[in-house]
Length: 114
Image 1: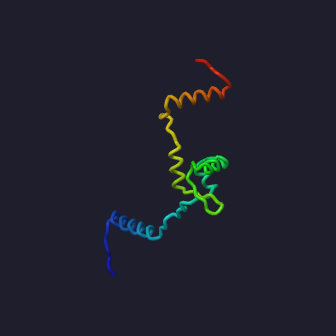
Image 2: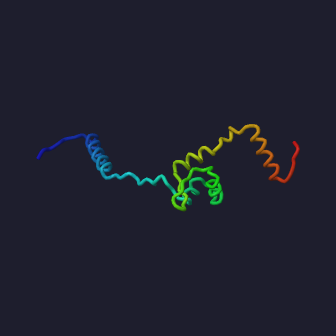
């Protein structure tokens, strides 16, 4: 038998390296969801209502595919579509700002002169 003399720092380094190797060997990657998703999952991803999602698919304004009589969506394509539909509020043009102001007036119940 051989006796090895080490410092506490060296011992700590040897033990931590052994633990890291053991954890890495036993670690399994988290299961990944498949890229395809169902209609209900597409509702969760987009935040749209069921009827709005049906309307968008009927008018081909959202990426989807058909599998028999089912609608199938790609998670990546849906996330890209949502990102393309998102508008930064600081990028609103003067025309869009006027439309927003007009919509707010109509919601309040009539014309308001400033």
